[in-house]
Image 1: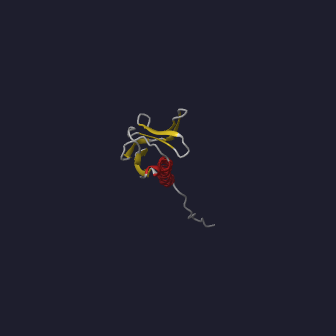
Image 2: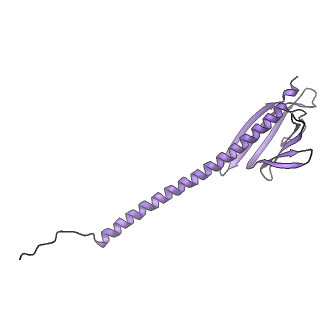
Image 3: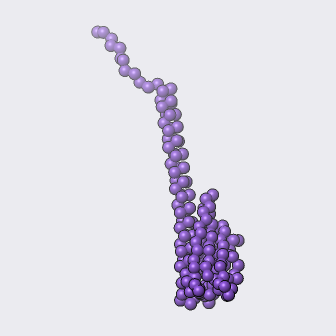
Length: 163
């Protein structure tokens, strides 16, 4: 009988180690890309929440100012005090020590946090000719989420004071 030579080849240990190393490198690259994607998603979500909260706060303030009356023209720039259309005496106050915007109901002294992550805010009031009320209020609000800062600006004309 003739001996047949077996021509089948198997992988050597060195080839297996090289294949394993390449696979490990590819898996690490995929893991790093996935982690970066998750971090980016979280940052974008937090930025969206901060900006959306600021937009809602500005919308509420401007809506109440437009229908309100007796806006205090001499209040500091971090405060805006007035009476709403349904005769509630309220104040919006920015406190930079805690980076928050508060809604204060002056009749009972309750305070509500309206917006977090506020790094600066101002209420610029334009007084009426007699100086006893305001014609309009310009509002500037800067919110921060991580390293992103966004400034939103709004204005409201107090309709009851248009004379």
